[in-house]
Image (cartoon, rainbow, N blue to C red):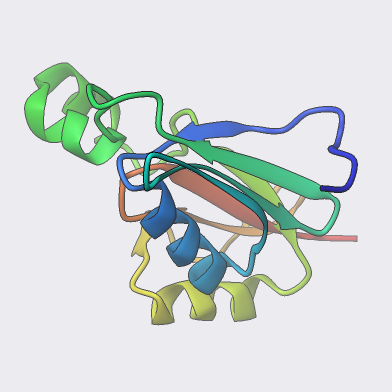
Amino acid sequence: MSELPQIAPMLSYEDVAGAADWLVRAFGFDEIERFDHEGEIVHVTLRLGSGVVMLGKPGDSYVSPRRLREQCEAAARMYSVPWVVDGVWVRVDDVEAHRERARDAGATFLSEIEDGPDGRLYRVEDPEGHRWMFAENGA
């Protein structure tokens, strides 16, 4: 694998392989490595431009944000807003085209495209409930 950036988010998933496949299809990531343990995919590194995100499964007791909201009233309240809660911000070249790609993959949208302080953006949730903000540089 090529050199990693100085900082990279690490997100946990119940189904790492399924999440990676969906993120590639919906958000345009490229998969750069995949590891299995005893026949189960437990880690995938994805790249978009110069950034990476690492996906992993920390153990069988892990539950995704979506499942946690179903099981815990406090978590459901925390995620009742359309904001990115413990999420990932990603810059893209064309926010409208990116949103269409995510829509075609069945993403759950938290906002329409809107003007933010640094350009146009939208908020979205992946199938396990992780939140993402995709922004187009306004410059």
